[in-house]
Image (cartoon, rainbow, N blue to C red; front, side, top):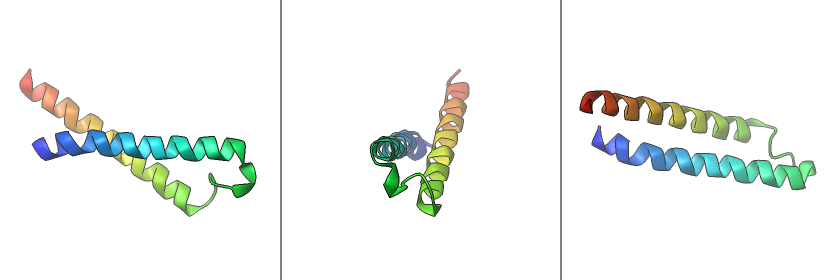
Length: 66
C-alpha cells in the first residue's frame, strides 16, 4: 500500500500534465490532430485510471488512519 501511495499521485500528475500539453499544442496547431486517434484515447484512459486509483488508495489510507 505504501508503494502505491507514493507512486500513484506522481503518475497521475505526470499523465495529467502530458494531457495538458497535448491540449495546448492542439489549440495552437489543430492541423496536427493530436486529440484524435488511438494514442490520445490511450493516454486519456491511462490518466483517468491513474486518477481514480489514486483517489481510491488515498481514501482507503485515510479511512484506515481514522
